[in-house]
Image (cartoon, rainbow over all chains, first blue to last red; front, side):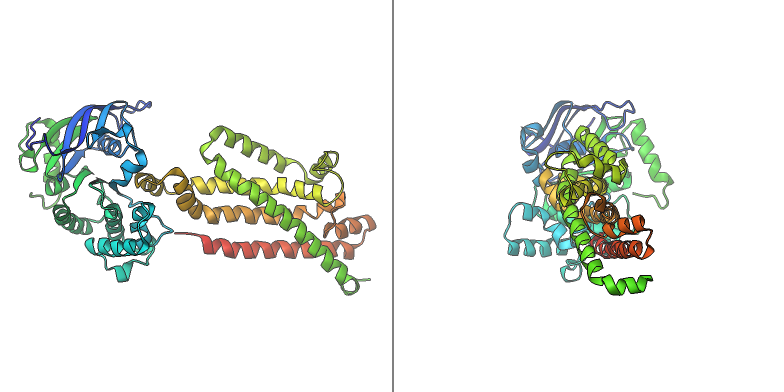
Length: 260
Length: 210
C-alpha cells in the first residue's frame, strides 16, 4: 500500500478495523479488517469488481449498514453512536437508479431534505433554484416536471441536486453515472469534476470503471474480495505492481479509444 | 304481468330497496376500509402478525356467504336478525381484498426509492406517510374496488336474514317463481356493481403514478 496524502489533521471519515459479514455464504459484499481514512475535501474513489465490497463500504458510512466488528468514525464519532437520522441528513447520497420519488416534482425531490429540516418555504424555493442551476437544469423549465418526464441523464442531475440541497459536508455516490449512455456519462463526469472542485465537499465515489476513477479521484482505493489491496493517487495507480491493478489496467486497453 | 308493467307499478319500492342496498354497502365498505387500510399498514413490518391476519381474512372469504350470515345470527351483540348482522358479515367479506392490496401496495415499491428515502434521513413514519402510502394509493383503491363489487353482490343475500335491500325482491322471486320480481332485484344490483366498478376504476387511474 502506498498512501500519498497527509491524513492526520483533516480526517473526516475513518475506517478502523472494520469488518462486515453476512450470514449467506456467497461472500459477496463482505468486508474484512479495513483501515483507511478520508480527508476533508477529497474525492475518494472506491474501485473494484462487482462483489468486491465497495458498495458495502459506502453503506457503512451512512449507517445503512453497521460493522460486524471495528468502527467507522465520522468526525471522530462512531456511526453506531450517531443518531442515524441526523447522520444521514449530513451525508448526501446519490445512487445509480436515481431513486427519485416518482410522485414528487423535481422541485419537491430537491427540496425534500431542507423540508425535513424545517426550512422556511421561501428559503427552500430559492435553494431548489440554486441547486438546479448548479447541475445545469433551468428551474423554469424543469422544476415542475415529474421524474418520468426527464431523461436518464437529467434524472441523475436531479439526484445530485437533491443530495446537495441541505448542504451536507459529505457526499457518497454509488455508480451514479453507471446506467447512462457513454456520451451523457462523459458529459456528467466532466461537469461533476468541476462541480466537486468548486464545492469542496468530501466525496466518496463507488465505481467499477477505472477510467472514471482516474478522471475523478484525488485518491483511489482498490478493493478485491472485501480487502483493500491498494490506496494510491490516480497518477501513480497504473504503476502499481499488483495483479488486480494489472487486470484493471488491461480493461483500459480493450475499451475503444483507450488512452488516459 | 310482464317485467315492464311490473317496473311501472313498483318503481318506488324498487328505488327504495336500491337505496337501502346502497346504504348497506356504503356502511359496510366504510367500516371495512377503516379496519383494512390501517391494519394493512400495521402488518407491513410485522411478518408473524401479517401471516395470521391474512390467513384469517382469507378464511372469511372461503365461508359461503349464506352460511356466514347464518353463523352470525346466534352471536351476541354482533349477531341477530337485521342490518347489523348483515353489515358485520359484509365487512368480513370485504376485508381480504382491502387488507391484501394495502399490504401489497405498500411493499411493492421500487427498492431504489425506499433506499433513497432511508439514506436521506427520513424516519420510518415519514417513509410510510410521504413515500409508501402515496405510491400505493392506486393499488389500495384497486382492492377497495374489488371489495365494493363483491359487497354489492353479497349484500343481496343479506335479505335472507332480514337486512332488506335488493335481495328481498330476489328471494321473493325465487319463492314465487316470479321472473319479474327476480329481475327487479337482480338488474339494479348489477347496475350498481357496474357503476361502482367504473367510477372507482376512473379514480384509480387518476391516482396511478409512473
